[in-house]
Amino acid sequence: MKLSILQVNSEDLSPYAIVCGDPFRAEAIARKLDNVRELAFSREYRTFVGEASGVAITVVSHGVGSPGAAVCFEELIKGGVKTLIRVGTAGSYSADVPPGSLVVSTAAVREDGLTRQLVPLGFPAVADSDVVQALFEAASETDGLVKKGITVTLDAFFQGVEEFPHQKYKRAGALAVEMEISALYVIASLRGVRAGAIVALDGYADADLREVYDPHTDVVTGAVEREIEAAIRAIVKLNQ
Image 1 (cartoon, rainbow, N blue to C red):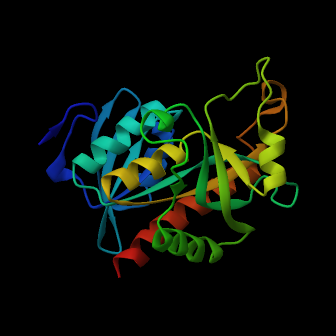
Image 2 (image 1 turned 45 degrees about the horizontal axis):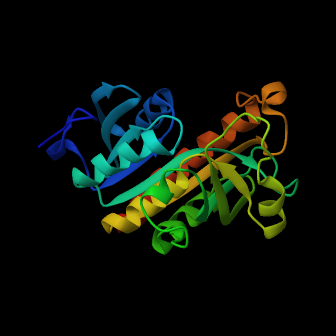
């Protein structure tokens, strides 16, 4: 079956997928696998397949924001993917979890616009517990700080005239904010598959990102490398 938006054949996909926003990060992830093939590059969706320790893994980029990412998730699931892990970046809510740290998302606050069109507002966006455990164990084997906890998914990146809800979620104990995890978790629940996410912190959520955002520092680059390694190892663990 040809997936119309990803432009790949479902029989080429594996049951395990790593998803990320950036098409070039997808390429970087794929380079860590064996027997890699690039299947397609359609819109923001770039798809690779490869292997790690004999386990077939699909790698796909989903772009920025929940609506476009949801298209990717839905098509992967339609194509037979049963476990999805998002690898990405996020803004920290606490100086105790500084840039360069990793956060495994156990659940996501649904401050996005997409999921409220899919399920009632009271429906939770929750990760699969086995995926969370595998990600946390794999990430803890790398050097550097690793936390697990609640993240926030927000549509807006740059501040407008409305106040972002950062302070209330920071006080409630959320660890970080990003733009796609709630969509992943809700869709996974709806379609009966497993999902988890790990993010590298690349700054602080309450900063003026128009002035200070720089995800290309050495500390962030190192954290991204760690989370990629953790996601691959987590899939191998889940397959055992």
